[in-house]
Amino acid sequence: MKPKLQVALDNTSLVEALQSLRLYQDAIDVIEVGTILHVAEGIEPVRVLRALYPEKIILADIKGADAGSLLAKLCFDAGATWMTAICSADVNTMIGMKKTGQAYGEDRDVQIELYGDWTMEQAKNWKDAGLEQVVYHRSRDAQAAGKGWDQSDLDKLSALTDMGFKVTITGGLEVHDLALFKDLPIYCIIAGRSIRDASNPLQAAEAFQAEITRLWT
Ligand code: 5RP
Ligand code: MG
Image (cartoon, rainbow, N blue to C red):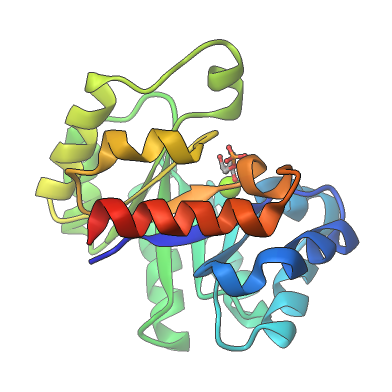
């Protein structure tokens, strides 16, 4: 299946995020309320986006670390389809999010954000516990310090897909990076700055979609 295109709204205000999203709303599959926007505006952006886009998948990228059920209730009450947990959270936190989500509907889900040190053994525990989605992340700060994509990233991605996870990739992705991942069954491709900050954001989103279609169909 073709990867979905997810746009991360890491804006510092809801007004700015809505202005940006309006430009490319029809060209994307998943709307992400970025961690930065959550810090700036709390859970309100999820509520507003759900009212404006009743049919879209909306992800709340809160990177939750504890109190899983309570955080999940806040995200799913506001209208999120998916939410995120940080990989260092206890597996019971992730289970709490997942179980809480399932009470809202079968499509509610949790993405585990892979940052820093995590192991394949932990990944196996997450899978055994019923978690299905992981986000393989090159952090913004690691990218700024010069971290590129290399074979070790592809090997880990491949191991995660072999385990049966729906694997999403992100972290300063540009259209020309996508070919690197073409042999993997990627679930979502998340782009933030390369769409939001483009001189023509609609054209940028369409270029991502065209490349996704070219590489995965
Ligand atoms: C950073 C994030 C971002 O939302 C994600 O990396 C996408 O943004 P960008 O393409 O600008 O890196 O979760 O922690
Ligand atoms: Mg994000």
